[in-house]
Amino acid sequence: MSDVTQQADEQPLAVTTCEGADRQDELASARDELATSKVYVDNVLRSMADSLLVIDANMTIGSTNPSLLALLGYTEEELVGQSPGLIFGAEFAQGSIIENLLLQGSVSSIESSFLTRDGRVIPISVSGSMMQDEQGQFQGLVCVAQDITERKRMEAEKLQLHEQLLDTSRQLGMAEVATDVLHNVGNVLNSVNVSISVVTDLLKKSMVGDVGRISQLVQKHLDDLGNFFSTNPKGTQIPAYLEKLAGQLMEEQRTAIAELDRLRENAQHAQRCVASHQDLAKVTGITETTSVVDLLEEALAENQELLTASHIDVSREFDEIPQLIVEKHKVIEILTEVIRNGCQAMAAGPSKQLVVRAKLIPGPPDSVCLQIQDTGVGLPLEALTKIFGQGYNTQDGGRGMSLHNGALMAKNLGGALRAYSDGLGHGATFSLELPGNFHFSDL
Image 1 (cartoon, rainbow, N blue to C red):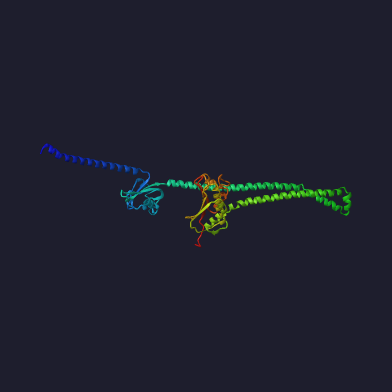
Image 2: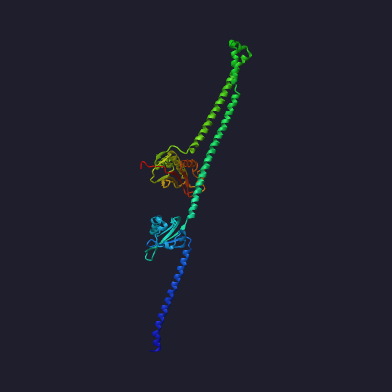
């Protein structure tokens, strides 16, 4: 065999060997890159502040990250292969999170809770997505959870502060009521004192005493009255003096009657002032069993003329609620005023929708929430507590003037009247919360 032939025969083998070596180098390089990527991904997952949970296709826990383990107090070996219900509880296993993940493919910022190894409940915000292979087959779920304990604490503190502000506002309102009563009654007493002084001075200066002296003169001359009135210097002055005295006494009578009328008017004014605020001081009254729906319908009926004239569309959303034992007239009065304020707030707006709701709030203790939602001018954040102060009002609507009394009556009923709004131009919702004093005998 010639050298050329031999060289030709050996060349393909060299090429093949070279290609195999290159392919091996590529595979090795790919393995190195994959290992590097895996290390990188592992470092990323381990450094995450949020908790990571991977649920396999068989709906068991596949893997976790250190943040999750530190939060719950488990080791990875204790969790892998277990049901997610171990750390989420029935809320996750039976609730909407899994369903939304399977139906929609992802969820974002769903509030739930973790159960730690020692039984503590940790509020969390869960986001997740469904994993699929290239053929679209279900591979599992990836969930990322944030511990929102601090956020919940701040929200609770904010709510507590809001309640304190409401309570302070109501207390200030009650103080304003007392100040108003004292001011009005004080003005009345000033007028009463003036009238008493006038009548007292009038009686001190009255000429009524002269009548007795004239009577004594006449008694001395009963046997000779004609001569006494015609010739006696004192007797001749008596007729003219009696005429003058009669005029003076009539003037005194007119003045006294006028002052007494003024005294009566002032006393009635003080009585009305006290009576107008008297209901606010009553803690209990006559209760009766009534339907929550009837309370709302009667309040709507009280405002029917205004609703019709303003072309306001009313919609109703009523839960099934047992009959309530409550001071019916006070509840209707509160609701009537809230609906009237809502109508006034929508008077100049393009949208005129009033939603009336009745909701049962499970306890313990159970309570009832009656809501009036309007599409009116809305309320700024700073007005949500001020609106229940006495005399507070807005420029664009009728809110505030009667809501003060409503808030006080709601408190006396054992409940609360609250306002919610997303700001000016976004309408407002007023909620009357009442204790669930239910009557079940007819159910």
